[in-house]
Length: 425
Image (cartoon, rainbow, N blue to C red; front, top):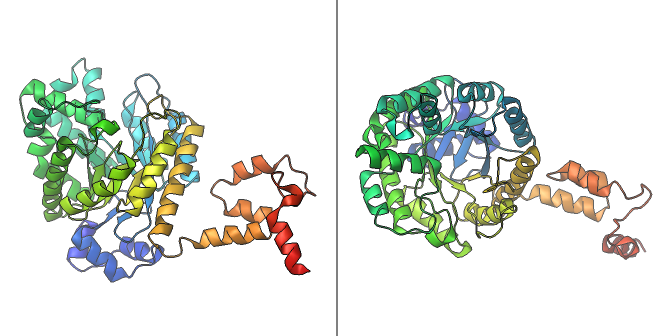
């Protein structure tokens, strides 16, 4: 049975017990929210990992994307990036590889990854088509579905499937002007496939068959947003909302089959539209967990998109998003380096933590109180041990002599020291 089916049968699994303990939540509450679909416990039956819990009343989680490209493929480097992401607090990893030995990369990541791992099966399908000398639109339905099953057997915990793009979407897309068009890689592949073959999206047409496979291995379906806006000009348009309506319908079909669901969201969204997007998703998709990329609140900051994304992510998580996909400084520019991965994870850990404080998540603010106490006491060691990035703090502090109590910013003007000295008098 899947975690959802255990809940529907009022059975409390070991994973539910762990989630309840870690999230300061009653076990029965976890069960009830699994029944409603507002929580997902993401873990393939074939993996021995700590499950990823996302959804209503839980702490905000973050995902780090990794993966090769046709121009850069190094398994060892991807494993290094995974280690960095996990070191700094990523709750999940997605392998988005499109080049090199994709199967071997995924198998090594699955073997060495201690958290939930997700994929986009269509990427492997497209890669296999190219290896065979075919165009991506020449993929057969059987080839696409076989890869989903193979990845499920291997242990993939969650899969992004762009099942909400339909023939009706394609027709509407062809008559809609968008500044950036379709920026989703999986979405673009599927639009081309439907257009060239004049057929319905196989993910949509064969959705029940796919659900049967996912149910067998308790793979959580992450319903992809192929029409997500890739620039502010395209935000919250009819294409995006129409797809979201379809995703809401598919969510109920998945739940009826016992399959757990997450909904993927934008994208590039002006700051003032973020809360509206969260409300719409929760309404149309029956409060299913929302997994958002950013969202990025401006288009003009390449090289700093971990910041534009974290700004949007903080508001998104405060107003309804449950799971944040990080953005690195390399977004829109190149594959991320180890440093880029670290910067992206830290930025989104800040966003997730800030949101948890704002929403009143149990004990979220206690770490901040500890930091404040250490700052007041000029306890540098305590500050560094409490910080998200101890190494960076040490690097900044290293040029200060050991006998200097304050920082070099204030010196004798340090308010913390002066205030404490005044109180002592």
